[in-house]
Length: 92
Image 1 (cartoon, helix red, strand yellow):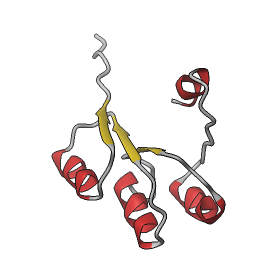
Image 2 (cartoon, rainbow, N blue to C red):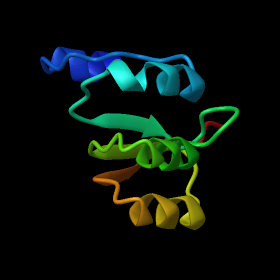
Image 3 (cartoon, rainbow, N blue to C red):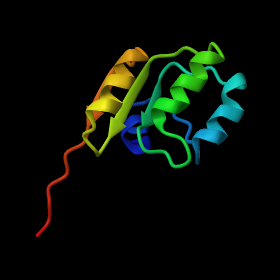
Image 4 (tube, one colour):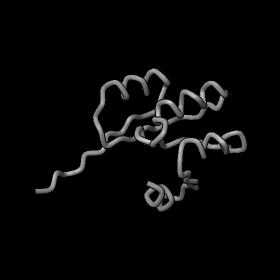
Protein backbone atom coordinates (compact mmCIF):
# COMPACT_ATOMS: atom_id res chain seq x y z
CA UNK A 1 0.00 0.00 0.00
CA UNK A 2 2.86 2.37 0.81
CA UNK A 3 4.29 2.11 -2.71
CA UNK A 4 0.91 2.70 -4.35
CA UNK A 5 0.16 5.80 -2.30
CA UNK A 6 3.72 7.17 -2.59
CA UNK A 7 3.69 6.71 -6.36
CA UNK A 8 0.57 8.89 -6.46
CA UNK A 9 2.36 11.66 -4.60
CA UNK A 10 1.02 11.02 -1.09
CA UNK A 11 3.29 11.24 1.95
CA UNK A 12 3.01 8.01 3.91
CA UNK A 13 4.21 6.88 7.29
CA UNK A 14 4.25 3.22 8.27
CA UNK A 15 4.00 1.73 11.75
CA UNK A 16 5.05 -1.77 12.79
CA UNK A 17 2.08 -2.24 15.12
CA UNK A 18 -1.08 -0.64 16.41
CA UNK A 19 0.67 -0.01 19.71
CA UNK A 20 3.47 1.88 17.93
CA UNK A 21 0.89 4.03 16.14
CA UNK A 22 -0.98 4.77 19.39
CA UNK A 23 2.28 5.96 20.95
CA UNK A 24 2.96 8.29 18.01
CA UNK A 25 -0.64 9.48 17.46
CA UNK A 26 -0.52 12.53 19.76
CA UNK A 27 2.20 14.11 17.59
CA UNK A 28 0.79 13.13 14.19
CA UNK A 29 -1.21 15.27 11.81
CA UNK A 30 -2.68 12.60 9.58
CA UNK A 31 -5.16 13.43 6.84
CA UNK A 32 -6.33 9.83 6.54
CA UNK A 33 -5.54 6.41 7.99
CA UNK A 34 -5.36 3.19 5.99
CA UNK A 35 -5.72 0.39 8.52
CA UNK A 36 -5.70 -3.37 8.08
CA UNK A 37 -8.32 -5.23 10.11
CA UNK A 38 -5.76 -7.88 11.16
CA UNK A 39 -2.96 -6.10 13.02
CA UNK A 40 -1.71 -8.59 15.59
CA UNK A 41 -2.30 -7.95 19.27
CA UNK A 42 -5.31 -5.71 18.64
CA UNK A 43 -7.53 -5.44 15.58
CA UNK A 44 -7.83 -2.42 13.32
CA UNK A 45 -11.33 -1.88 14.72
CA UNK A 46 -9.95 -1.86 18.27
CA UNK A 47 -7.24 0.59 17.20
CA UNK A 48 -9.75 3.07 15.78
CA UNK A 49 -12.02 2.64 18.80
CA UNK A 50 -9.07 3.54 21.08
CA UNK A 51 -8.19 6.56 18.91
CA UNK A 52 -11.80 7.79 19.06
CA UNK A 53 -11.61 7.75 22.85
CA UNK A 54 -8.56 10.04 22.57
CA UNK A 55 -10.38 12.41 20.16
CA UNK A 56 -8.00 11.48 17.32
CA UNK A 57 -10.57 11.75 14.55
CA UNK A 58 -9.47 11.40 10.91
CA UNK A 59 -11.06 9.56 7.98
CA UNK A 60 -10.30 5.84 8.06
CA UNK A 61 -10.07 3.36 5.21
CA UNK A 62 -10.09 -0.23 6.43
CA UNK A 63 -8.53 -2.95 4.28
CA UNK A 64 -8.76 -6.68 4.78
CA UNK A 65 -8.16 -9.93 2.97
CA UNK A 66 -10.77 -11.71 5.08
CA UNK A 67 -14.47 -11.14 4.55
CA UNK A 68 -16.04 -10.83 7.99
CA UNK A 69 -19.44 -9.16 8.28
CA UNK A 70 -18.85 -8.42 11.98
CA UNK A 71 -15.67 -6.43 11.25
CA UNK A 72 -17.36 -4.60 8.39
CA UNK A 73 -20.32 -3.69 10.60
CA UNK A 74 -18.04 -2.55 13.44
CA UNK A 75 -15.96 -0.44 11.04
CA UNK A 76 -19.06 1.22 9.63
CA UNK A 77 -20.36 1.94 13.14
CA UNK A 78 -17.06 3.74 13.83
CA UNK A 79 -17.71 5.91 10.76
CA UNK A 80 -15.01 4.55 8.47
CA UNK A 81 -14.70 6.31 5.12
CA UNK A 82 -14.26 3.04 3.19
CA UNK A 83 -13.96 -0.71 3.75
CA UNK A 84 -11.90 -2.39 1.04
CA UNK A 85 -11.94 -6.16 0.67
CA UNK A 86 -8.94 -7.62 -1.16
CA UNK A 87 -9.60 -10.55 -3.44
CA UNK A 88 -6.55 -12.60 -4.35
CA UNK A 89 -6.84 -15.46 -6.82
CA UNK A 90 -6.57 -18.90 -5.29
CA UNK A 91 -3.57 -20.85 -6.57
CA UNK A 92 -3.70 -24.48 -7.47
